[in-house]
Image 1 (cartoon, rainbow, N blue to C red):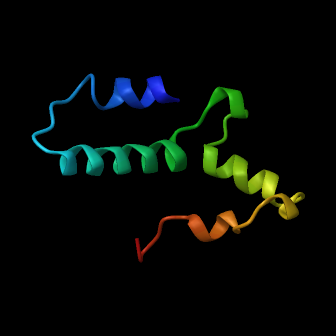
Image 2 (cartoon, one colour; image 1 turned 30 degrees about the horizontal axis):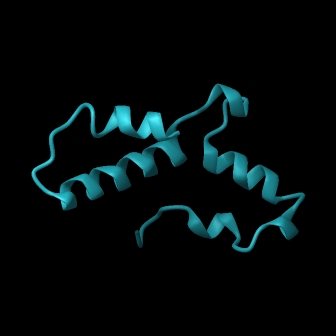
Image 3 (cartoon, helix red, strand yellow; image 1 turned 30 degrees about the vertical axis):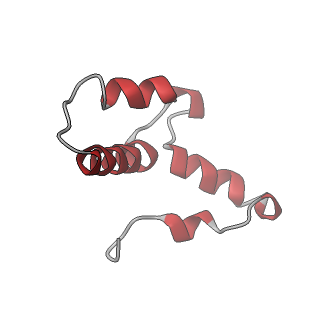
Length: 74
């Protein structure tokens, strides 16, 4: 995952400030976790996979992952 982040941000773009990098990292992580479908997760996004595991095994989680979904207030 670290290589994926590094390749998608620091190696491809030049940032004039840490704030620009931070903003791009936040946007990249949101897109990766909520939109990118991964072959290793059987075509699910990381968020979809966590929700799928949470349903039968909710005692393993501290926070309900459904409350982490980006929406109108994010």
